[in-house]
Length: 305
Image (cartoon, rainbow, N blue to C red):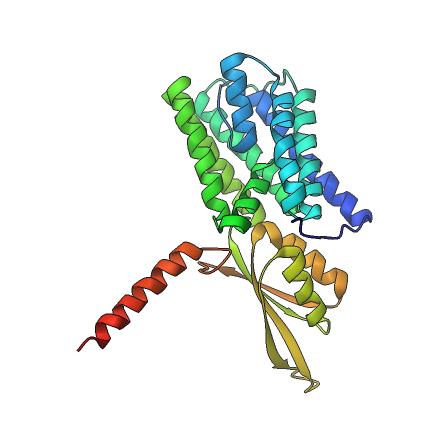
C-alpha cells in the first residue's frame, strides 16, 4: 500500500528541488574528487556501486547508482509516500547525473587521512542539504522506511547494518586501511550532517497549536503515518478551548510535518523539542516490549507470597 501524500507544485517545492540538487552536486563531486582517487567507500547504494566499480572496473559509478536504485524506487512507489519517493527520486537522479558530470574531478590532497576528513565534510554538507529539503540521495532511506513500517525495524538499524556490511567487505577484498579510512570519513560525514540537520535520525517531540487541529492530525496519521495525541488546552488570553496536537517524529520527517501543518493552517504555532529516547511502536518497539515483559515478571514475583 502506498501512503498518499499530496505534492504542492509551487515555487517552494521547486526551491527544495534546487537545494536537493545542490546537495547531490556536492556529493557527486566528492565521489569523483576524493573518494574514488583514494579508494574510499561510501554508505548505502553509493557504497555498493563503488565496491562493484573497484572490483570489476565497470559499470561507471553513476550508472551503477542509477541501476541499483531502480528496484528500490519501484518498492518505494508501492510502500512509501508519493512525496518522499518523488523528492528522493530527484536526489537519486541528481546524484547519478553529477557523478557522471564530475568524472575526472580532482582535489589537491595526497594524504589519505586529510582526504577522508575532507570527503566526510563534503558528504555531510551534501547529505544535510538534501535532508533539510525533505529528500535523500538514494534508495536506502526508502528501504529503511519500508522495513520500519512492515517489521518495526528502526531506520538507524537498517542504515547501520548496510554500512557495516560495506565496511567488512571493503576490509576483506580491498584492504583494512581503506575500510578504516572509510570509517573515519563516515564519522566526519555523520557529524557534519548532524550539525546541518540537527540530527535527521534524532527524534523530535512536536506540539502544534492550531484551530485546524483535527484536520492536521488526520494528515499526520495518513500522510506521515505517525501517531498523534490531542491535548485539551485553553487560550490564556481568550479563555476559549484549544486543541493541542502532540506527536513524535524523526528529523527526516520534520520538514514534511511543518509543510503539512502550514498547508492546512498557515497561522499554526509549532513547538519542536529534542527527544533523547522514544520507546514504542515505530521507534524502539522491541526494547519497549522487552522492558514491559521484564516489568511484568518483577510484578509477578512481587505478588508471589
